[in-house]
Length: 176
View 1: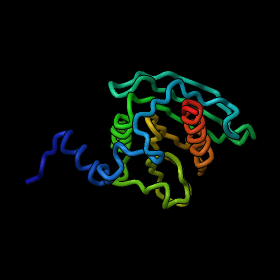
View 2: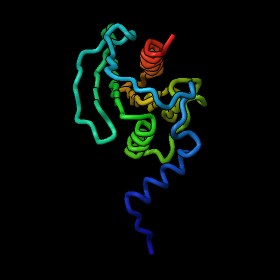
View 3: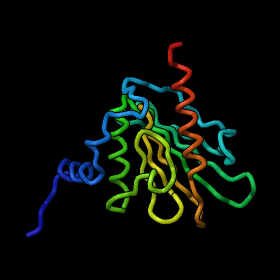
View 4: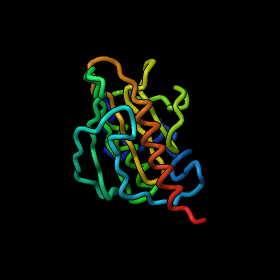
């Protein structure tokens, strides 16, 4: 007899698989009340250029969702899609991270630190030598960055740039 799981039961299994309760609600800076807003990915943030920007419909956990299509300026047709979820809180960013990883076919994605990429408060990358996708939360922002190129294209550079934009905005709103 096969077990039938409800969506909540499946979500709980995914949380357990990703050790959610060890990192949920925590930030590297120790500040869980930070609210970054209006984050934009300028075309000069990385070697890739933004060619398309689209506002998507946010869920109840989000204030804003923006998807960017970026291309390599070298004309080699490398494309990267970056989706930035501006969530209502750190907790909602972490819950949104679970929403996103639930859409992936892999039963578990590796932590970015195991692939020499340190971005966000919590980060998961793709299997294989290169990170072809990265999902990370920093404060109340969740970023999903995926290669949309037929050949392997690492998304590490854009992940670092997005994380740097978030950290720069955080530093700008800190007193003193």
